[in-house]
Image (cartoon, rainbow, N blue to C red; front, side):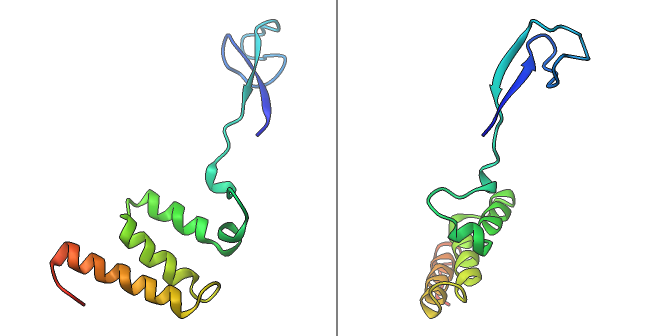
Amino acid sequence: MTDLKSCTNCKYNQFPCTVCEEEDQWELKKEIQNPFDYQEGGNHYKKDGVMDVTEWCMSHNIDIGEFNVIKYVFRHGKKNGIEDLRKAKHYLEMIAYMKYEENL
């Protein structure tokens, strides 16, 4: 995160302000960082592309069960192998039961 200066009069981000040409009305502000550009507590999800899957699922309103199916299928070859596929299957079974009252 970086500190930026912006004109308090017109919010222009260059100094001196070339929009309203006010030089004495500047404030420091914090640049907002996209949380999908970094991972808190390591880099394994970012490195393996899981953060991209997370961002895609959130932007498409995928529910948590469906997200977990996608996540575990996506990462099984890079992390926990058959255990991740079993987890994905379990989430599929929960979805089938909750949405259709049936077993797979």
